[in-house]
Image (cartoon, rainbow, N blue to C red; front, top):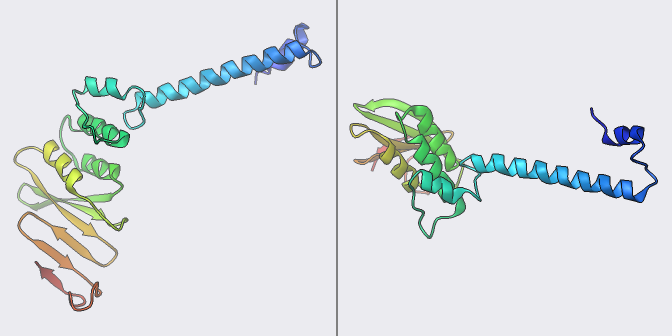
Length: 185
């Protein structure tokens, strides 16, 4: 690897004992570090999920108008979703949409005609599906629709527009459900 100190010492322009030489070398190191930091920041700005300084420009390119209540992360997710929504909605896109919200997802195709189910693994105590539901509705074609399922190790909750189905293998609240049964609400 290139060693600037050795190269400068061989030319006679640099000396370890000379404070001016050490000061110049320190200044060069700072400039190089600033350049590397700027380079890393520009790489972050070019990616929609990490952009901060150029987010307004990206929103203009994708014709998005942020709400006043949107956080920086909400704005980044809207940009990502706008890019992903272009083209065909595939199971891998649905999984990526769910991953943006911290959900581990699996797509079950053809649950019913023109309907698929998104099974979310419950890694959090509270799951908010409204934003994910809105994104999927905007991205999917008019003839297609989706259901959600919340999956745990032995329990299962399925939400559809018509009914809610619960499969439990243990009591959640005493007297609410019998153990090991399947119930429709």
